[in-house]
Length: 541
Image: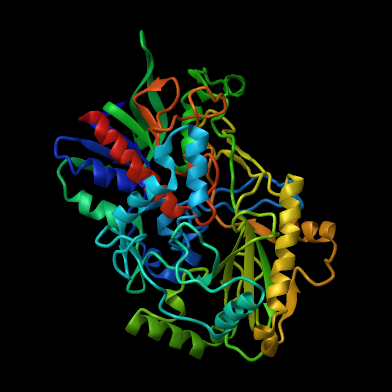
């Protein structure tokens, strides 16, 4: 085994959190930092063209190619489960939507952990610190940071009509989803710069890579953490990994920072003997630290993709139906970085309540001027739009568990979608809310006809069944190394993100969320890394 050297900090994973950590920790020239990434560099053309996510998901060049286990809540289906395997991680292949969630999300974290520093008023400055908002600085936005936030560069007649219909159905128009209350309907803000994807590798890692105190190793697969028993208990001393056909060992003098995401981080912990002891024993892994919560508490947003055929308005289905249309789309992007190729996967958003008992919106819409049967399939030959709606605060809980002691074997991902009566009820209500919007006068001229799931699904039980047939992930896995109080036996890290009963080890990524945020999860993960970097640097001084 070869030595990769000794560093103050070893970061595992160059995704959203890892890129932020690498940037912030290397600002101090005295800190020597190693960043290890299993994927390659973000030099694939389709990463940077927004519509290119279609070619990045389920592509071994950029994606881990995970699949879920067969899920009873989805009629026994398995789903592809995209996770970025490239510099920038999932920020290189995601929908680019800039969304913080709701203030109540973070206040809930603060209450659960007993740490008021996670409350909305405390984390808002962290969001603003890294932000470069197109509209400039203000009470809830920052300017001059690394994380570019812009308005989208196109609109669609059918989406404008949907927004009017939502207003008629009781969902008001809004100008900004990111002030702590995301009630309303608007086009999403996106992480783009002049129509080009702005991932965390560009934003945070490229500037940091010029610093002599940062070493980046790509194409390197972390096998396990190096744990040492001392009089003070278990201490993490770094990692063992493979890369370039060699086995490596990297030593961390101060801390090892696990930023491999909601799937990768619990997998590495379990492979290292940190997790539920009985389960690890059964796989031939000697338990080092018995933490039953590792890999549990998996939460995700299940999107219910309702499709409506229409007449009288252009959609991507029709614009891309001919070679002439496709050529025009390509020229529009080549000349102006605008048009459909600059599109985020979802353009229009809306936040609403499934019923009046909800204190804040518990439904999120991603509305698209296109339709297809499933991801990877061609667009339908008829004009249509898709109104995807998800339950923002699901009560279903899944898990991520290694299948063997082989670090290259994919873990078993079991989301357990729609496994609670509450989630089935909300799913049924969500479909009815969509039908109410579509039946509003603003859309009448387009003669919308429900294609999926179909109007024959009517009762609550029938609609819950339909949800299982059309539901798919919107790629927001979180919670599998959740933070909590010291006396919480199901938590994995404390409020400072330190792994319980292991010195020198933190988890810094979406896996630490105790509850999923009420919206897209990428920028909340960025904020978590910003906060973690602050805590780490405070400790070292």
